[in-house]
Image (cartoon, rainbow, N blue to C red; front, side, top):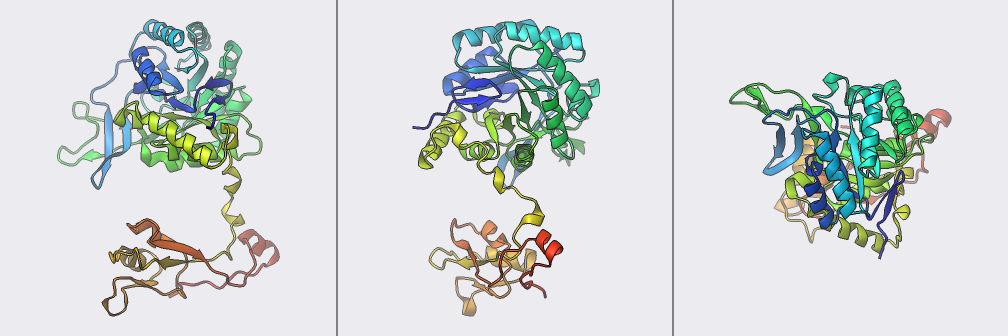
Length: 423
C-alpha cells in the first residue's frame, strides 16, 4: 500500500489532503471532526483583526440541474476573537499532534505580523500561510489581493514573516493577475518555504433578474466576491503548472481550486503540488468526502506502482509545452463504435453547427452517424458531447509526414501536412 505521507515546504501530514482556510476550518471543533474523518491537515480560517460579516454572503452557480458547479462568497476573515482561535489551535494540536495545523494570517503592519506570528507559533502552529489573495473586502483595506498583486510588497511582507517565524511559511497567491510566475517568484525571493494557489477569483456570481439585484443580496445591494468550486479547476491547474515548470521556481506548491474528488487531487499532484487544499466540496458535501479521496489516491498509486507521493508529484509537468512546440503533423480522426452508439446524433449536431461539418446522419436512416474521414480534423468535439463513454475514439492517422512544430516550420521551413476542413 502506498505511503500518503506528505511534506509540503517542511509541513508534514499523514496525507496530502488539507482543509483550505475557509468556513470549514473556522473552529477547533470543526477541525477536530475533520481530522476524525481523515483529513491530514487544516489551514485555519484567516486570523487578523476580527471583522463583522454581512448577511447574506454566499452564492452558487447552478447549471442544467446541477447545483453549485461554481461558488461565490463575500465573506471575510475570522469574526471570532484571536484569543479564542489561538486557544482552540492549541487544543487541536494537543489532541492531534500528528496532523498539520497551518495558521492563515492577514494583518497590516510589521509589528502586527511579528506579534501574531509569535502567538500562532506559541499556540502550536506547524506552519503559517500568508493570505495575499482575498479579492474582496480586505483588499479595500490594503490587504489580501492588494498585497498579492504587487510582487514588491509580496516579497517584503514575506521576508518579514520568514524573519519572525520558526516554522515554515507558505504564501497564498491570488489568481487575479495576468501571469502567476512573477508573484510566485516574489514569494520565493522573500524566503517562503512554499506557495498555496489559487485563492478565489474576483467575480459576480449572478443577478436576480426579478429583483434586478446582484447576488448574494445585502439589503438590496451586493458586491464582487471570490469565485471557487469545481468550475475553477482549469484555471487553478494552469497556474499551478505555470509555476511548477518554471526553471527558476523551486519551492513546493499546495494546490487549491475546484478539488472535488481523488481524480482532481491526482491532477494537481501530477502538475507539481505536494499537498492539496479543499474548501467548497466540504461546504457542499461535508468532511466525509476525504474518505473517498484517500481511498482513491491510494488505489491509484498502487495501480501505478507508486510507493510514495514523491513518485507522483510533478510527473505531468514535462508534458506542458508552448503551442509552438506542438507537432502540427500529428493527425487524428474520429471513429464511432457501432455497437455502443445509441443514435442520439448529438455528435452530428455538434459537428455541423460547432465544428467542421464532417459527421452526417447515417445512410438510409441508419442509427449510427457517418464520418467523412477526409474532412475530419480531429478536433474531438464529437467525443466531448457523446453521452456514451468510449463510443467515440480519436484514432491516430499515419499521413507520411514527419513530426514538425510551428517553431521548426518558421525556423527551417519544415513541411506541414495539408490542411483539411477548408470549405
